[in-house]
Length: 422
Length: 132
Image (tube, rainbow over all chains, first blue to last red; front, side, top):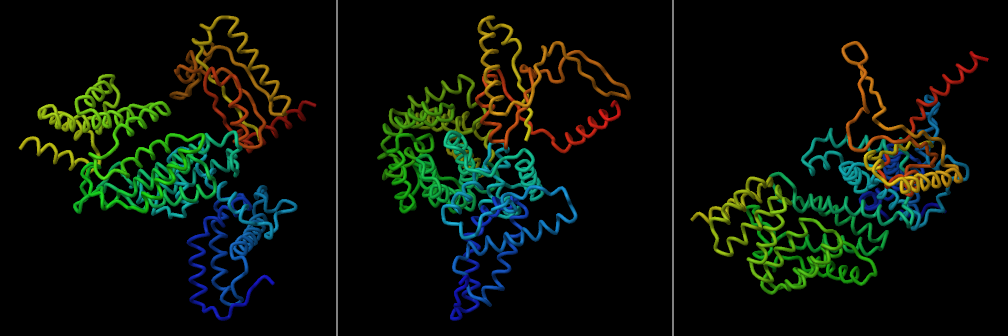
């Protein structure tokens, strides 16, 4: 019996169920359809059609026993119809994924594992390193998260046409350069996973600390990134996935405390820590501990561990700065960069006093590194301010201001400058 | 599917390498090509002379301009072409990542344009028929 008669269910209840299914499962059904059909656009089209049929048919015949498999099956039949119709006009259509191959998979074979594999395939394909990072991000938001082109455009302060073009080109490259729809082999996994993690982290950062524009943060993007992190961890329990999710949760926990009512930035040391989200801190901290216990963890886990030390401290003064410096030492070994070195210098200043930090920052700038990085001058300015060297502090704040692009950051620097000239 | 792999190298670096070292490197590359052959992945290739022997043609102002040297003045120049048979881009990347040639400079992997190659193939056949 394919259907369970549930006459007691009202049509509103069925509509609500379909809405919920759409919200929670449609991208996973899509992932399976892409494998079966071998075409992103046709998969999208028949996915929408299958939901439309569901609204009509489930109200009449009841909800099927396995709604997700029903959706896949219905969409697949729609796709076969569409391909047959098109084939009459276009004899060159040859490849249709696995669907038309002899012995094509029967719906009964779709268990939870198959759906999970397909979901992973979709993520790895959208984040394939042969696509530009911009294209990876746009494609992931569109295909994995289900955002509309317009939503992606507004999140990245770009035009819908630009984003649409980027997505169309990426899909053409997947098809023409034959980027396979598969989960990478164990051998390739670490490198390919890096690419997925960096897309998720880029999304999160764009939402957490927008690179330009009027607002300091865009919560919707961060929310999507955290959701993706959770999905990925569920599909692929790997220490670095854990580390990245922890890092995002720990940063996100401070969102309410990071800006004031006027949208101005509040530095970590000045934040009202009672506004931090305890639940996110607890989950994040637990994930960090789990990741750190693994034989191999990476840079996201180390950064999450740094964030967890901050999260566990009652105030800036009570922070265990020695531990933070030690973690930055570890990070410098894993992924040396001038930005990491700058952050380490700030932590050293907190541990040993502003003069020690200042020497390290001057050494970085003296080498010619970070010459265009506003935060390097802002940090230099702040340490000079603490040392009472007002003229040096002012000069450094001025350079930082000339390089900063984000409005709330500019207002923060202007405020500091005013305080120093009063 | 065919992927054309363009191998680039810094010629001045290769020229300054000790002779034995260079020979060993070439031997290593040839040995890996054999491995590709065994797997049915080696579909052909051409080694190229130095880019200093290159000539570039450009259509300019209604006539063809001939200039000395390669098209792009970069440190790394095209040194050879390998035609790879692979089932998809991931396999092509995996196979070429292990090629010792990648140590001397980047590989660019370009999917062959199979539509256009069909046209070329048809022309080849037509020319053969004419001759026979």
